[in-house]
Amino acid sequence: MDRLKLLIIEDDPLFGEAIWEALQAAGYRTRLATSGAEALAAVAEESFDLMLQDIRLPDANGLDILREILQRQPHSRALVMTGFATVDSAVEAMKIGAFDFLTKPFPMEMLLMKLQKVLEFKQMEKEIDSFRSKEEECHLIVSRSPAMKDLLEMARAVAVTDATVLLQGESGTGKELLAETIHKTSKRRHKPFIQVNCAAIPETLLESELFGVERGAFTGADRSRQGYLEAAESGTLLLDEIGDLPLHLQGKILRVLEEKKVFRVGGTRAYNANFRLIAATNWDLKEMVQEKKFREDLYFRLNVVPLTIPPLRERRDDIPLLIAHFQKCLSAKDAGKKVIFSPEALELLCRYDYPGNIRELKNIVEQLTVLYPGEAIKPLHIPVSLQKESWVGNLFENFVVGKPLKDAVGEFETRYIEKVLKSAGGNKSLSARILGISRQMLWEKLKQR
Ligand SMILES: Nc1ncnc2c1ncn2[C@@H]1O[C@H](COP(=O)(O)OP(=O)(O)OP(=O)(O)O)[C@@H](O)[C@H]1O
Image 1 (cartoon, rainbow, N blue to C red):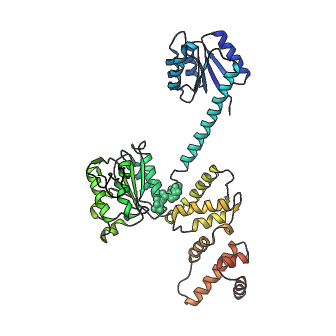
Image 2 (tube, rainbow, N blue to C red):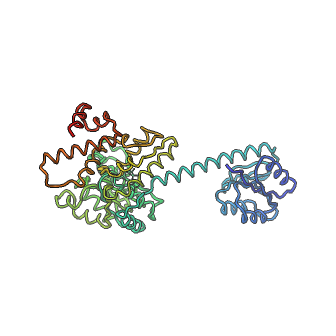
Image 3 (cartoon, rainbow, N blue to C red):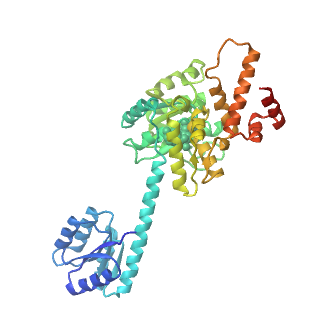
């Protein structure tokens, strides 16, 4: 860490200079101000890590000066110096934001010890800040595909409104992440973001979890408690997997949305329900409406701003970017967890269809990082199941239609075996394992080519 820069604010020039000298000798960069006005002028010129300030100043109230400086330089810390008679002011100073105080007279060692504490604290603050920003970065939506561009623009525009949003997309496409992003960019961002996965809560508990319970509503309800709808007051409620909400609860949710009031199970008192709703689903809700599995009136109520996230296989240009993003986040958490992907392995990963979408890609990167830390990932390292699927897709490209089935199957088999062998670097045992045949059978097939 750089040397700390200190501002000494002390009206007694002799004492001020003694401190100045002791701190310079201890390696700190220091500047001395002998009045409130001088201190404010110094702060206007440069920023300080720490203020060492006497509370009694000739030209101003020391507490006012402290307040002003901390407002102008919120990252700096203050140690106040006080005589016995002004200990109350020291307590006041701590309330304003001073880090600690010293009662005069004090030995220089005591001052140096306190400064060391501030140094440690500032170092910790710095680490927390950088951890926080890295953590935040890892919660960002990463994309460069044109397919996502319009969608993200629409999400940004809708975030500042209070409109209900319906997020649709296959599992793992990032619906929850998008919902969280909408909340974080909305005016409700300082209020709660409550997520409820309707499919994860047993149906018998879902009603009381959502709406809350009044004491005595049923056997075992020995105290009143709020549900998720109330907990989301003034914030955002994400109802994930809303397609799994039973029909009778769909009606109750619709009433809450219309009346902006919640009634707990077994209760007659109405509680406020002022939340912004984001609903998410993997199902096609329109189809569910046609099949009478989802209420049409609720569907219309939810479908105010529909946003459909495309599956990863329809935005393959995002794959290398996402891989780099997950690698960065993993190595930020643990510097030892770093892998490099060979171009062949990357190509393989870019061709796979990802039925589990981004979640599956993230898991694959994590898995490879744990299994092969520090290594260069080659096709050999990529899970076999994943290789088979992407190769099969690729092998069908340029396949001539018109041959008898037997010939086509033979041709496919030959091409497939060649591809497996190439990717396994000619390793026959591994190729046989990938192909699910014995080494001997592979040998036979190679002879027949
Ligand atoms: N564009 C993206 N950039 C970075 N990470 C992403 C992106 N989209 C999704 N992720 C990550 O992928 C994982 C799955 O995303 P998320 O849980 O949001 O998907 P989902 O659509 O809500 O899934 P499900 O329908 O199964 O609940 C999460 O770890 C999320 O942070």
